Image 1: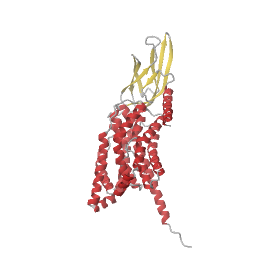
Image 2: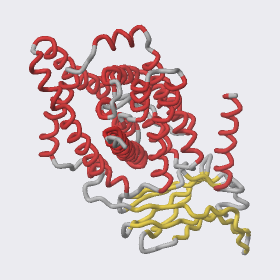
Image 3: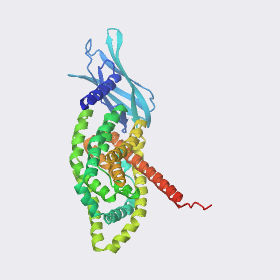
Image 4: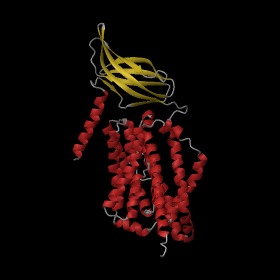
Amino acid sequence: MTRKLFMILLLFVTLGEARKSSLGFLWIEKTEILFFEKTEETVIIKSSYKDKGPNSSYLFVQLEDPKILHVVNVTKTSLDITNFTINLMTDQEGETNLTIQLWDSEGRQERLIEEIKDVKVKVRKHTKGRLLQASMQVDRNILLLILPMILLNKCAFGCKIEFHVLQTVWKRPLPVILGVVTQFFLMPFCGFLLSQILALPEAQAFGFVMTCTCPGGGGGYLFALLLEGDVTLAILMTCTSTLFALIMMPVNSYLYSRILGLSGIFHAPTFKIVSTLLFILIPISVGIVIKHRIPEKANLLERIIRPLSFILMFAGIYLTFRMGSVFLRIASLEVLLLGLLVPALGLSFGYGFAKVCLLPFPVCKTVAIESGMLNSFLALAIIQLSFSQSKADLASVAPFTVAMCSGCEMLLILLVYKAKKRAIHITGDKRVPLV
């Protein structure tokens, strides 16, 4: 069954490539979108066409909007493979299309050999250079204010750890296993499959695959608390999946980069993964110690955990949108659609598998949240460390889009849940008058 599915996928990708070029003489670097951010850019076109006469073939480039982009020159080099280098100059920001034609001059006659239409070009100029650097210019005062609140919140979560739950999970680790299988096996394949169906460029497809193979994020146990899931299980699942990420993220990055035909030296962000794990474990461990040594302080921390969690939730969504606003400018409708689908699929798979396994309702909610709330910024680390800046910027759209969409979806679920609970509470308080 798996072999047939991969054969269908391979046929789909092959048909997509064939659609670009009917004869197959010309080959442009595997992307449907060329993203330019410098004043001068070059595009290399490889040609397998054999000239009828000495240097008889040439390339003609037509621009849809010359105000955005214009051709400086086209040079040809003929070795084992003929390369055409197109030198372009960007004039202003915007979007336009290129039409590339391969011609052969036979004597006095000229013959069109092949044509590639509608090569999309997006020009975005940034005075500070890199997209990621521009996106990181967030208010430092907000970050300095939020960091102690995050540590205090994690410490408060440590005060809610129930050791009997840990013992139960240790004896019956099914929820943790379901989370690991969903996050590191099912979700990456779904991300790859959907990116191919939506015909995303290879760099963006890889960005979504890496985002889908991320472990659960810190927001998982926050929403588990607000949605009345199992907080202890949520913390344990986050720590376990982050630990598994040390192995599975490099494995998936290597596997899917080869399937997508991307070349690069892939760097696993080991330090970032370990620091993320320590950032969760240390303050939570402090909370556990406080609960056992100073119970009255633990009670105080538990009382402030809900209002503090609400503040951090809204602050996190705001900062994510602020950092990702630069990337949203180059996001297509397909990217936004996939950004909405990824967390929704994680939630559905997690809840569905837990329900089939007849797990308790709070546990089902927790597995769903941990499968849908992903630590997208670990994917961002792999992308930025592994690719040239142009490809990294294109691929970085994925983790930011998923982070923004997952935050909005979880907020919507929380509002619906609270409204439904309030309606049930009001209905239950009504007294039927005696007749």
